[in-house]
Length: 232
Image (cartoon, rainbow, N blue to C red; front, side, top):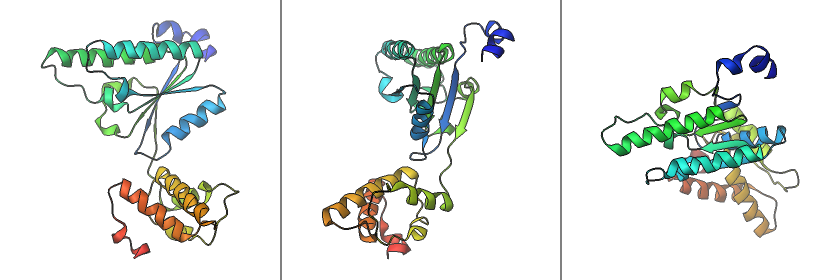
């Protein structure tokens, strides 16, 4: 970074933009975006400051910008990795200006972009809905990393690796479980809930416990397990 920005002159040419790195993590819920941010901050030996942009946005004029300023000041003092979730709440395709509030919303978006560019550390933005993001915003982000929904082979590995080594396991049909179209986040929830059921029964985790965990997770997603041939 020193060579490119200082010796080769990019810092002077891009004056005011800062020398930090901005990254967009895009993918559906449960595909590992937050986990990846945690791993990056751990590898860099830096704290991770996680914020939810949908909670930062305020209906009161000027309040969003004040909230953002507090966040960036704290991040700069701590030298942390800044992880901002639900980027679509501020960076969805800009609305046509029909009233003063629309104009102010666009000003807030521009302010956040400027603040990201001037931040000298690592800023990671995350979204579950990359298709609604403003192209002008995406162009100003240095890197975009897409987190795909796991295929069957990946799901098989996730099922196996989610249980800690000390968890007693019975006969689990991971090959059949991998056929269920679930994200890594879903699988993690199912394994944890199944483990609680097994601990209550004082038994190793078996397929009965997994089925109970699946029922809870499918219910949260608003889906029914009755159409699943695997458990019919």
